[in-house]
Image 1 (cartoon, rainbow, N blue to C red):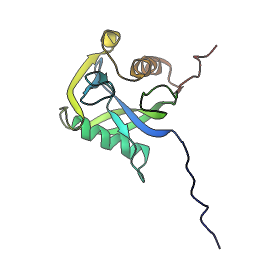
Image 2 (image 1 turned 90 degrees about the horizontal axis):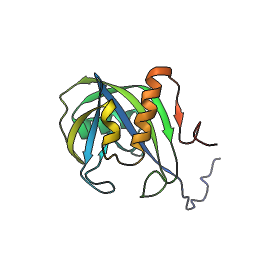
Image 3 (image 1 turned 90 degrees about the vertical axis):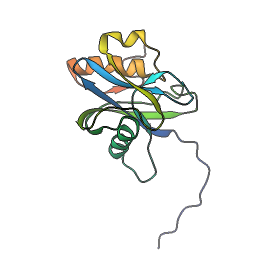
Length: 155
């Protein structure tokens, strides 16, 4: 007979997702309504709910923050640097998605929606490590592959 192990306190990273949505040469960003990084631009995303797959979380968060129905088509990478989020060790799975339907408008904890040209990203105030993620996305579009927090960055 199986017995459940005694519960104990763990300090594990908290899983989140982010989604890159592109239209032409523009990336969809939201202006954050809440801290941390209130009023900074960020990729649509958020926390994975208990019992939810990361793919379903990506669809839900995109719908909640942008009103868009999306489909994840690839994983850009996993970003798990313990210092990427001031709230604690929060890791993210970053998806590249396509828009299936809807018209982008801000919802939930996004104050605004902004389509930003890829060449203008460096001129914007971006939350978390999203500038690095979008830079990696630029490389991904050319060569493919996935990105990790530290792969090819240490040395």
